Image (cartoon, rainbow, N blue to C red; front, side):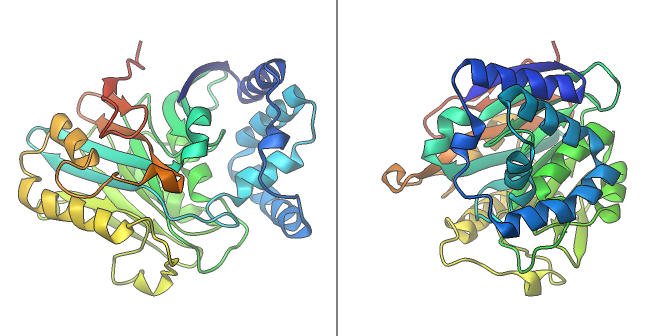
Length: 335
């Protein structure tokens, strides 16, 4: 897992990233696993007005990357706009729990082993005040899959196979937008409800005030569950579980054992939500209490990183690889 630190405005950050890759003989177009066909071109064109309205800064960053790579931005837009919808997957687990010890968000990023060396742990510091500073992790670039911003708002996604695809923001780009724009859960909920969604997915979000939600998101309907006195934890894998959303599930044949991961988190937190802390959160993600990350690497899949966010202190603990085999270490990102 690579660690990168960016500082500047969106365009300059993108240009620095694209240029650095090119200087190291890394060409993003060579890493794109598909042809830029007519479907993807049309999808990019349909999504562009939405990005121009809601997230023009990210278009500037993509343009900067393209300029640094000396390529057109359209192939990069095709990759980034189509993630989690035109390129669906069934990966990752997340949870959010609150008790007297604090509020903790945990996530395992499950993906293909061939991507491990390209996964990024990134810190963004914006000099133009067009976004909040944040720490984030991604299996790709630009879009984020979990992270925390300068106001202590943390967020994590899981993918859900879409039943339909429409112009909008996918869950990874939405996560990035929330990190840059929202100080708390209330603001995140308002943004989620305002935007058109390209596909399906879940977001668990918690803030420094101990507020938390699970958002189950689809093109036609979104539900929000809140942490309450009677609901002290929220969990997500790769399917919708609220009664209003189950009809939107289109589970693939291979779910990467999503049901088993969901049961492991649910069973443990049902008994231990009142006492779990950062250390136990790490143990849960590492599979010490049931199946979470014990994949057969010979099949080309594994947990490629794992994170625990302590929302009470803004501390972040990350295992750069499968947490059953790699120790969690603190990301001193606030320095």
